[in-house]
Length: 217
Image (cartoon, rainbow, N blue to C red; front, top):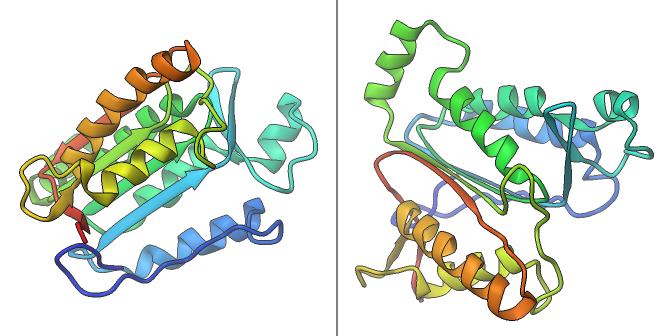
């Protein structure tokens, strides 16, 4: 799918109980393996996440228990998400994770997208051709993401404001990944302290060159 300066976007919105199961999400992400390297791929998730035994789990709608055994069987594991997203061939990726403990997944995804399980030599060659990928996580691996502000979680509210134009720091009419990441990184902690008297610190993992993900209207 292409956004920003490019052609129209192809958007898949998964919101129902049936669409947010582990199996359905995996099937949807697997379909993007047909993208071209020059395409822009954006993955945004606002849900619940947890860390158990040092591993991140995305809580999908089919999860009925958060015991370690059930999480490993029913939730989307860190390893599964790494493989699914790293397998998308686009060299321009923006990954946005609005869940608790999201920083843990963000760190793992960054490593996976850089190497894709390849040898160091092969990974370096891939990196030299890559245009860029950016991961923005709502909170660190030890934090909860604050909810209940302007109809969204605090992180998503700030993200949306950035995409509306507040993140366009160079005033060229386009929101680029690094601009968006910088805006979120600055605004979320400020508002979290001001509105909730709590700490929330997004985790930003940029790689390569910035690219447009939106146009200011």
